Length: 157
Image (cartoon, rainbow, N blue to C red; front, side, top):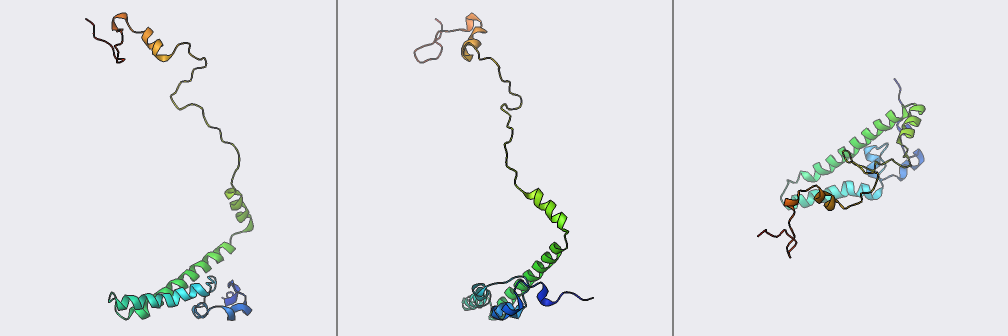
């Protein structure tokens, strides 16, 4: 079974391959295209971190070799996963992509919001008397007591 050539999935054209950083070329990255600063941080940053950890005696000196190799392994793994995602997305038919795009378009409009809460009764006519007066009308006369100076009911003599 023949597959696509190595440069078929590459995001970098073949003639620009020589201008890529050495780190990206050495790892053979196809889809992930880190720039110079990111490649510097991946390699030299990992070496500097490993040296600092070794000088602080938190790790052995083998970390100076192992940590940059582990970072390179993760970058290569990320590139391989990204390549699989690009290939699987290329296999999706065009009509499925259009259907997905239609589903993801934002809808602009107005939503109907109910004006009442569930279980709440809204009166259609305004009441004539305030609530406290309507409640007092239903009380018996012996329960009504005149209010004292502080607003509370005064005790009967």
